[in-house]
Amino acid sequence: MINIRLDYVLLDKRMKLKELAEATGIALNNLSVLKTNKARAIRFSTLESICKALNCTPGELLEYIPDESNENNTENIHERRVKNENEIT
Image 1: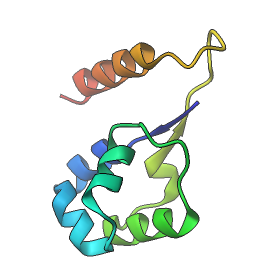
Image 2: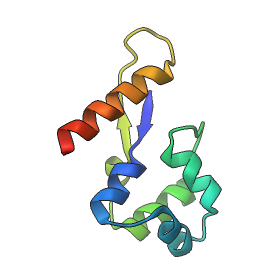
Image 3: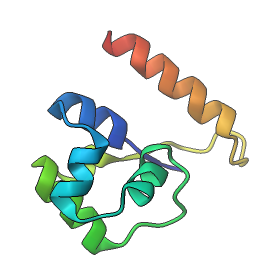
Image 4: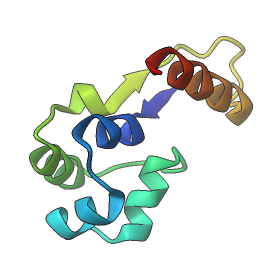
């Protein structure tokens, strides 16, 4: 599965989602969908705008996580995010 790490990049860049929306012209609700990993797809133009505003690469925003059980289990995503957050702090 692909994990969108927008929340971590925003934290690292000390930028709020609203500021990113203003900088990119992307609607706040669309960025929120990306931030919460509920997006099913992302346009290259959207990815490019986000990378430009955050001065980052697509590789910093996107992470590949091998599917361990062939199920798309959102609990596992949440557990990994909490684990990653604990490792950061």
